[in-house]
Structures are given as C-alpha cells and as structure tokens.
Image (tube, rainbow, N blue to C red; front, side, top):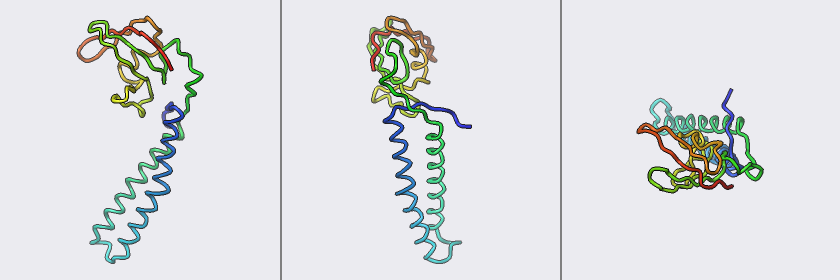
Length: 157
C-alpha cells in the first residue's frame, strides 16, 4: 500500500496534467519511434529500436509512479485551515533568535518543496520543528551543527 500524501489543489492538478501529458503525448510518440525503428529491419543490431524500447520502459515507470501518487493523494482545502497554528500550506514568518534574521516560508508537501520559492517541506527538520507552533512560540530545531531557535512572528494563509 502506498503512502498518503497531501497536496494543494494546484499541486494535485499539476500531477494530473503531467500524467495526462505522459499518457496522451509522450506515450504515442515513443510508440511511433518503436514502430519506425522496427520497420528498419534487423532488431538484433538496431540501436534506435533498443533506445526507443528503453525510453518506453522509463516512461511507463514514470506513468506508474504518478498514478500511484495520485491514487494516494489527498487535497487539502487551504481556505478551511486554522491559521492560529503552523500547519501544512500556511505561511510562517520566523526570526532566528541568535542572528535576528527573519525568514518567511510556506510549509508544503515534500513533492512541492522549492527553497527558491520559499516553500519548505513539512517533513524537513525546520518544517517539523515549526509544525503546530503558535505565534510567539519558540521552535527549537536540531540540525547537524547544533540547535537553531526561531520565534514564530506571524502565521497566515
């Protein structure tokens, strides 16, 4: 049995779109490549055929992985979430107690994490340390080089 994962509506729709593209665009292209390579004769010495078959195998694996993700995906309606606590899909502004630096992150599922967009996984050390904290709380987060302390300044959607 697969692991249930939570997604925003946008992230879920992107997964579905990716799967649709793989099934309806990429799969027929690879089938055509295999057919063309097969028409060129001896398959035992046909590198084009071998490459197309390998690409097909990789594509089918990607399709299977996406189908499983979607099977166990659950959509979270972010408009109904409580913003008095740090939860998945909330924005949190935090201050590093030692340095005074302020950071703003959105906690997301692992597959949506993108640090350059300020989206961190709720399963990351910082994400886990922030979860369920309230405004004014101090989150102590263990990292390989020691312990970080962050004050929760603001929580929003």
